[in-house]
Length: 122
Image 1 (cartoon, helix red, strand yellow):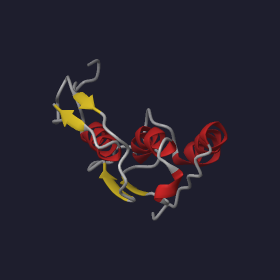
Image 2 (tube, helix red, strand yellow; image 1 turned 60 degrees about the vertical axis):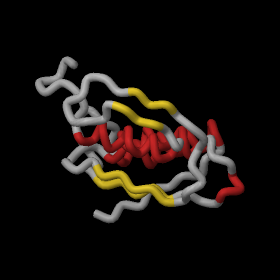
Image 3 (cartoon, rainbow, N blue to C red; image 1 turned 90 degrees about the vertical axis):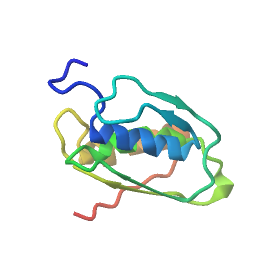
Image 4 (tube, rainbow, N blue to C red; image 1 turned 90 degrees about the horizontal axis):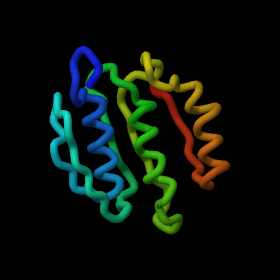
């Protein structure tokens, strides 16, 4: 609310839609500029492939931060999961990709056992 353009931006909507897909959730109010959303999570999805696009130069590391907890609680017998994220990797007010790769993911691995990796295309 305190930003020059309050409400959801494209990257926020993309992150919410990704989390809703990962947890088979019902998402309401997820429109650009929205000041209120409702996410009713369901069971973690059995799908193995997800895509989220920040549309703008929005941060793909913020998309990843939203997705990781859902991936961490997924049952191991469902196989690996691939999440393709499109967006910026070093965006102001967001964790840079190097921090994510070298700090956040190893910490998540230690805390949850989640074996996550990042492959940068460009």
